[in-house]
Image (cartoon, rainbow, N blue to C red; front, top):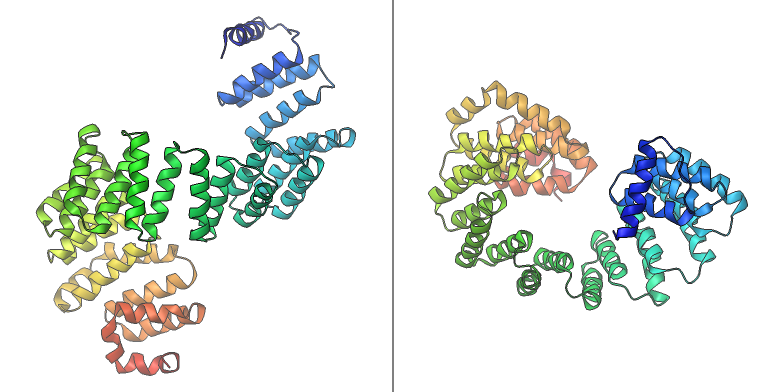
Length: 435
């Protein structure tokens, strides 16, 4: 803020303190309102817009400021009423349709939102880039990726060259998903803004998810060259090295992170994973335990510690620890799948299995978590639990319900329990589905 703006705001706030109605030019009120909006002081912005309205009752720009403040305070109904009122006399102002579209999108009325945004484009064929970004951001925030993409591609076709437009296009393609086109537009975004750390990290993560290790490493290295203090980029680089099996380099990278951020839970978990993959379970257990001590509400270190305990043969304790991870992330299929594997392992020793199944806390927790899983996954997980507990008949009942809702459940089940294919009762029960 320059000195003139600072003096203006002090003058305005002094008038509030003295309970005086001060007269200012409309552009001065806009400066004050924008100041409060940028500071997230939306109630103050609304109050300033009301003062401005008293001085300039017919100024549409100030009315738009008031609408923005109302929307920031989630007062969408009142904002929409004011928009409709203004539109009767100022039908040529495209911002009215812009904000109406945003309110429709937030309310889940995507067709109406798209209609309003199309009106914006028709009213102003040479739409400025800021408004183009605004439209796509609104739709993306509400997860209307297909609709956002239709506008973004139109903007690109009309000749817009802007890193933010390319980034949003890449992001929409990633969500659909269309990985190749996502990569293409992220790269185009970086052509326009090569020093954008965030875009390099996202592009690297995209490469990592498609197992393009070399390109992922290159992207994370670029991000680190822009900001060598970026823990996110460093952790992503570490994850890439772990996925490539280069654990020693990953450990060196983690040590650099911990030197600058001692106790970083993500770094400790990555370090634990490196030791775990090298079968150094004592070191791995120490890392995960330290991470739990540093952040008890993070599920990831519990998940790592449970794997280490399982690998060392302490399956009962592994179940108790994975239960803690599930309590923090109840719908995580990987955790529930691992818990099922623990029961499968215990089933080879019925005495141990029965001891676990007699534990009322485990049974109660299991039922609670399964209840939170929607639809076919609920049925499937119950079938897994019942089978691993030795109750084949009830298992079949739940598994059939799951299969009728989602046929892949049977494939998952037999992948988890390959020995079940030798169970005559199961094979007969699901005979027609196995053909």
